[in-house]
Image (cartoon, rainbow, N blue to C red; front, side, top):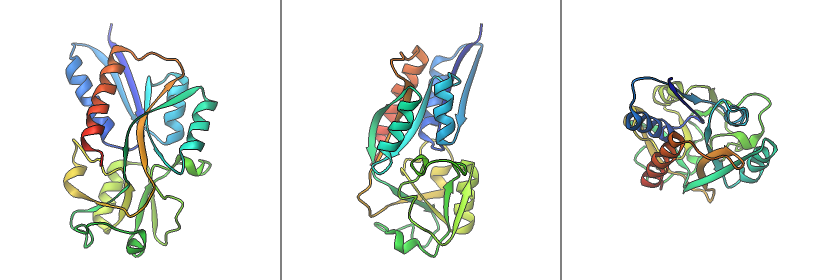
Length: 216
């Protein structure tokens, strides 16, 4: 019988790399795995309903309390792995890509790209730090590849963890520290009291290794 394992996560690369390592290390001649890029609400729903064993999420220091309350309401709990500073992700050819640091005011003339969480999603479900700051030019995306392509094509930017590992985004995008006191916490979500399967444990081990290696 084919082994099954599923992970849901926001639109980041570190869970992709951890998932790939897990599949390669497990091997086997027959399996049915799933890695789902989701909105924050969908990640929560996947884990709460058992569609995925665990979910990978980012919290900001501004949104942590509200997001924890949403998890509590669904019988879930967040396990922090590492803290990271927000970074501006922009094209490697962008005029500001070589700056030592950036303030949001310096980016006012450039398009801001972000992941669409849906019309009814709470502000705390945003995947970007400082998402509540008004911008003049905004573009919502539902797909990581589209967001990365548009950042390059339009000289736009987003605010991210800065952890671009393992896949193609790391070559086309640059990250610059954002001047802010806000912090990010990266981790995973499980049902309260749940025990990870052996595949889940392996995935979390790779996730922790990747995050602790690349977080700034």
